[in-house]
Structure formats: C-alpha cells, structure tokens
Image (cartoon, rainbow, N blue to C red; front, side):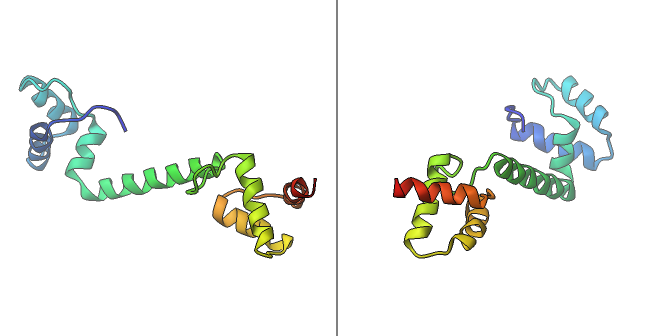
Length: 129
C-alpha cells in the first residue's frame, strides 16, 4: 500500500466515472484535467469501484502478511522471534509438565516456528547448567 491518501472527492469522482463506463486511463486523464494533484493508480480505482476486487486484494494482502510473519519466525506473542524467548517458552512448557515430544508441536502452533528435538533439549539444558 502506498503512502498516498486520496481525498474523498477524488475517490467519489473516480467511482462515478467508472460507473459511467470510462476506462482507467481515461479516468486518470479526466482527473488530471480537473486538477487532481495525486492521481490514483488503476488498481486504486479498481479497488474503489469493484467490491469483489477489493475483497480479493484484502485476502491476498492478509495471506502475504501471514506468510511474512511465519517466514520471519514471528508470532502474535511479543518477542516471539527471539531465540531467548523461544527458550523461555520451552522452559515454561517443561514447568507445566508437557512432554518434550509434544513441545515441538506446541511451539509450531503458538510461535509459528518448528523447533527440532535438539533445539528443545538445548533450551531445557540451559536450566540445568
């Protein structure tokens, strides 16, 4: 999403022109002729004038953000991406009595990161040292 925020007047005018049958390049030309300083892109006009396109784009953006969070090892928990946080989380799971064989599944579900058995044992061994 760009940092440009269009005026309500520009948005309504673009939708009005699109409903009247104008193409996206023609709409941009008309808006420029009317003195609009920041011309909306074709995609912006499409989102404003076509609810189905807006829904598809929102779903795509949501999936993209989710993939990025998972790729970066970040979760909804504050600090979920740091090694220290993961180790502390594993130690908390150990304190409540969760078997090591299940800790990996919980970490994948909650943190969005698959931890190997070696990583789990290393986190638990830090406490023993």
